[in-house]
Image (cartoon, rainbow, N blue to C red):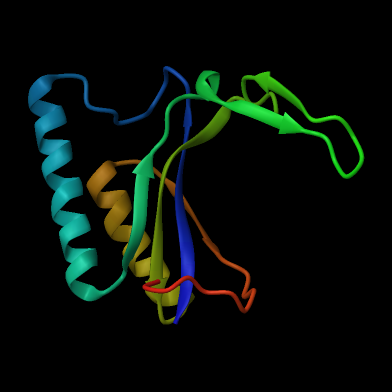
Length: 126
């Protein structure tokens, strides 16, 4: 079993398909909760979350022997940033893509699917 990152990229202040009314937000959250429950029942769900915008980021820079420097804001200047993600278990890329399709249906937004590299190190319970 491999792990995959399903990430949602968004442009700050311009999220296509984002809920704009309380009713739309309630329907959106209902779809997300149902999807996460389905993932959990299938043993696919590892972790997921939504992130604050890039203005909440702090960058720690510096390497071995260098002074560490922290700065506010995103590391790169880009229009798009990761707004949220899921880490899932899947047998293969096809299975991960099938879950990605369900995520797209639930959130009405494109996502990127990327496999984790095998490092040989696995945390207990994951």
